[in-house]
Amino acid sequence: MMKQLYRALAYLIAAGVVLQAAAIAYAVFGMFEWVAAGGTIDKALTESENPQIGGIVGFNLHQLVGVTILPLLALLFLISSFFARIPGGIRWALIVFTTTLVQSLLGIYAHHSSAVGWLHGAVALILFTGAAVSGSRVHRALANRALPHTQRESASAAQPAHWQGA
Image 1 (cartoon, rainbow, N blue to C red):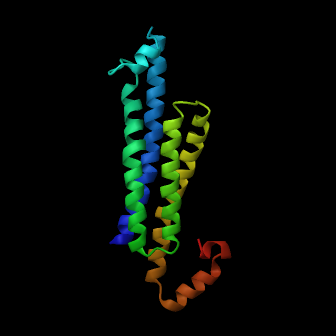
Image 2 (cartoon, rainbow, N blue to C red; image 1 turned 135 degrees about the vertical axis):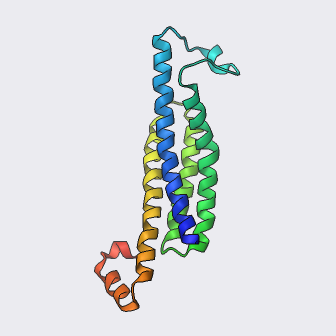
Image 3 (cartoon, rainbow, N blue to C red; image 1 turned 60 degrees about the vertical axis):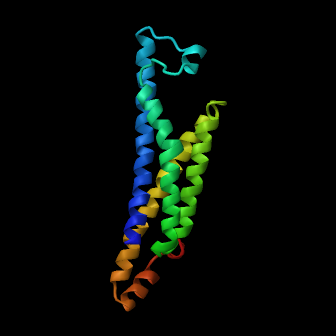
């Protein structure tokens, strides 16, 4: 049960990163379309309570998922890792949790320095990879558990050394 929760949370986090990418792409392209139709972006627009800008839903979704939902999922993922008994699972959950926090902070600070946006995009790829790898490790753990003990030892010995402890 806990292994399935661990796997589900890992894949939800990876899917959340994909949703983040789609939302920000929609937002930016919607903004370009809005500007091309004569809209103007200025300080008054960005400080208004309800900015009327193309793609605003994408901006709002990107912020909601990135600052609230993904950090919450990453925390639940980390907690589940202590109970799932996946070899290396706690380490991978810590990587995903830390990367999620770094990603959220980069997104917040990118509003003050656009250069931080480069890191924000790169760390998103690291987060996606970490979450996807974490989820796929469950399949291997479940497959190893289903093997008889002698086959498990030979399968473990057949793996390269860098896989065994990961």
